[in-house]
Length: 253
Image (cartoon, rainbow, N blue to C red):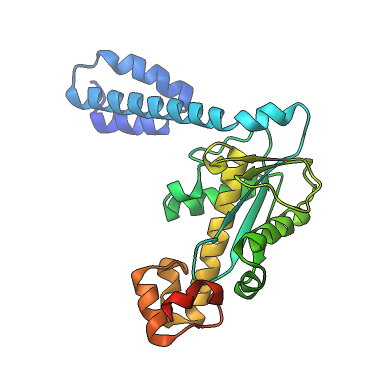
């Protein structure tokens, strides 16, 4: 008696990659539509995986380009330059050359759930990683660009081992002696910068959720301090709180 479609599905789900390939070849001649649908599903998944592996290979371009000369290449990126409230956060991450983190990408292109999953995987697989955090008050003192550089320098200084090269999203960080290369839209072109962008974004989002408990009337857990209509309305109604950036909100109050 031939196996039921449910049994075949379970068999495919439990098989290793090599076993699954053999099983799919074996069931190719099964005329049942349900079996053929299963085979098509797994072929589509395999094609999608191959496409993702190719994308990741392309995102290793800069790490491979400089990898022969530099052994500890660190990606740097920030989160929170634009919001009306909260800190600016920079992430720094050194990944092993052979690190494979599926769906690693610019944090802005990922769902919150996917960012959280990747954050854990990055922390697990990284050689070293860190974040730098600069407060709203400091942003008002020195401006957002200088505060971003300060957060990046903080993150770099916390790394152990120290990097011997930096890949930075779009900018060149002043007062840093380590060799650095700025890459426009680097968070979508470099695995190291993408990892740093996720570290920065998830760290900052968690901070804004915690700050929402202290200042619940503003809705920080939802908009993370960005200038949404609800945030601006609350700002006009209640006025600024201690984590608002005074230099950012003058036109709203």
